[in-house]
Image 1 (cartoon, rainbow, N blue to C red):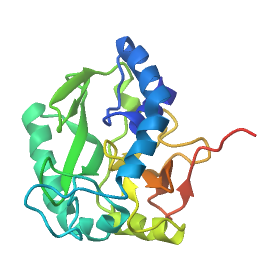
Image 2: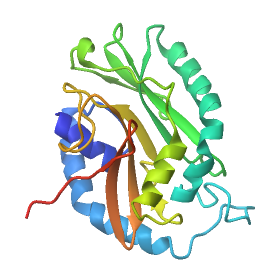
Image 3: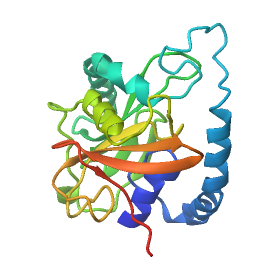
Image 4: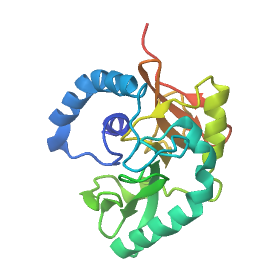
Length: 229
């Protein structure tokens, strides 16, 4: 189940728990992902701005995040955390933060922060962007709480540039930036990524390819799934 969860972060809205009845849908998404990603990469060459928007240098000017947009995202982090904390508290008193996501607001420029919370009393996950509540089967003691004190989107912006990615490269429309703690019981990232760290996951659309990377919060190291030779 955990391997399926990692795959879902790459191919659909970021949700930590995946009901078994949707397995068929996931398989279809995986099969079609390459074609969708290629089309998205081609569209990136001639982006369309949002209605009334003329400044293509602004974040999410066409509803998509780009690597360059990550440089200024930290200025909105605190307000975003405060907003999603209120949403979590409104859902359940014991809600604790499991993961957060940075994306684009609907039909607006700027940044949008969303989150997934876990409640032991409800034994469920709650997504603030969809208001969806999904039952959790894992032992609550194995579900980590995401600590936010040292989060920095600027650090992953710099890591991506050091790795050779270009500033104008788009990030996956459904993924944006997903931030989550990786543990032995709840791993997040490829097998090469050590557990016990927080990882930032992005899908980069570059040169007609979708490149999924996980960036370690501790040192900025980038990890990817390696294809078998």
